[in-house]
Length: 312
Image 1 (cartoon, rainbow, N blue to C red):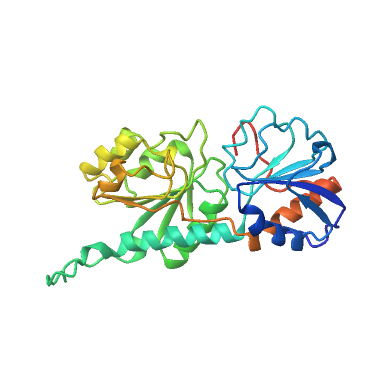
Image 2: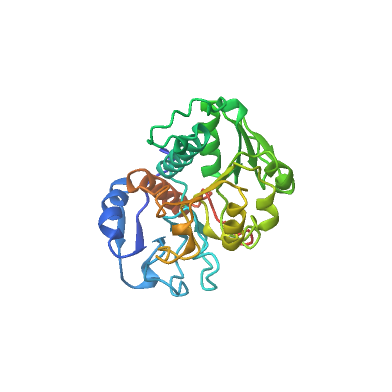
């Protein structure tokens, strides 16, 4: 949460994001930090900070020699963290609105899988014998226990699901059984709903390959609103044909928009959603960015600083 005790200091901030983002973000950012001089262009040497999102016009950060912080508006930073010209501190966005939206998306689809809502075709057949278990009997695994994973796990445990979290840090999460990545194979053996919320790093790409997917029980579901690179596409198609998993809800892809001729669109075991699981919302994210800018200018620790070696 933003620190209300942090003073407002005069600063000049460069805004670099996709076309149209200015109209949505500038009023919210200016309201969150009234003393800020926010602009979309100007002499790079005069800026104290940069607010950045993919699609912006800055590709070379070298001229911005006085910048104390590059604040991303996105939770994912894979499109900027490898830029060799970026030597300034980089912070990712941890937006409470984004976390809430992601938790709602994952919980909604988890409930659809849990209750078997797709079984009940309106075709005159009385399927009374297909009664789902109660939530505590449905093992759910959240793969990635960062801010989004913890928010999702909290919502699911509040309903009563038995949740296991796969975490690189091993940080405890109330009500969740936290396991290291090395235990993933064993956890997959009993997972009925797998929710994927890992970042895109060299260690996570194709983490769910043919071997990993084959460990999932028949009838299980995958929900992936994290990163499209996490799952081997061809391995997933083959696994779905074998019933392990039975269904995959995919919100992120290696190429976006997903091409119209991509086999995911036509596969009966896949539901495609168009990268709408969660969105950074100016109303809730602007105060987070403003707080970090205050911290950077005051020489205080910046929140959610990116570890370049880990990539997030």
